Length: 346
Image (cartoon, rainbow, N blue to C red):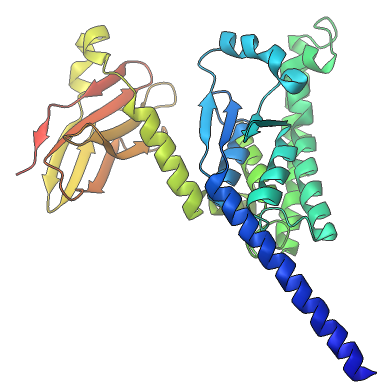
């Protein structure tokens, strides 16, 4: 009897391995062959966690961003529920951010959403729903009529009261839920998994979005968000995204703000295989250098940095092999884009 039970168990384990292996192969093929397009606005928002999940899964995709609000309004009647994000895979459209991320995990990378483990999948879903709950009051106060509140009921004065209560009471209470989840986790991820799930990407993206409004966040939350955005696939994706954005920017500063030249033209030094770009400009919340980047002789962006008001307006990077010239660029939030003279590399 014991031998028979052992044989049955072994056969079951072998069958499970076959199913798992087959699923892994199918997901690998889908990652390599699927035509994927994400449609959203030209901002982070609810498109951000979807982009990061696709990057983590290793899925190549078209990151389509509306060029204007008018373009979105023209497209809106054709969209299911009249909203974005919308993910199109091999011609099939999917909407609602959480549903899209579950699809990405189920279709391309099971580690993102282990649907075969019902208990774990339920925990991941709950974490996402909790993040949605965390920002509901904020969304209602911001969008008002979208949620059924006439402006004479939820006017600007009342909305400001909602914002204040949300910031002082609602947000801290919900953040504590995620602090506890991290405390309970045996890993650095919310669901206790070995690798991040869609919940980690969604919660981190939402918290990063809210962090612009409130600077005092618990240390474990800050560490968690940094871990998500420090993932190699995420870093590589965001670098590609930044390079593409900066590559398309046109130099307008000298034409529109000629008198501002002394503080805006980037300065380039090359020494010991290192390139340093600096801008003789102050850094304040209302007036700062937002970006510094460099292009090589072929017009390709080879290094870039996005800056905040507490950063120094400098960029240092190793000189890429084969580079024969460098042109530096910077963008001021008030005075457009400026370029340095071409610096030839000897």
